[in-house]
Image (cartoon, rainbow, N blue to C red; front, top):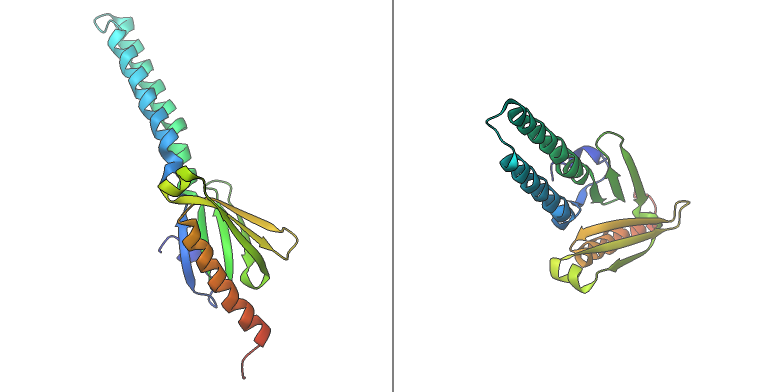
Length: 173
């Protein structure tokens, strides 16, 4: 996964990287369609033969473009900037396109992984994962994860492998 490679340290390997489920953007798409339907209706109702009508048409078009950026482009950039990464050593949440933030939990400290999916979420194949750790921050919640059961299984496998490696100590020198 090319978008996750830059967040991986040299001593770890990528297990899984994903973004929130695409259904995150349905509401924004519907708002975008509504903006352009309203803009089209407003432009159609304007008398374009008069000078003020043409100017008003440009104003309507400009407002529709600004509203499109606000209701579609900004949420799309937020969606693209939030990634969930599972490596052989940690689970990592990174988000933000202007102001960045991240939260990672070493797999050796993972205590419990739980997933939750309603009937609709099961039909659409996404859900929420809660990763609990023995650390100060305690919980990492991953929302709208595609295939939450599969992601949970991979976290469990990677955590078990890392915890057993951690308990065995360093290998022969």
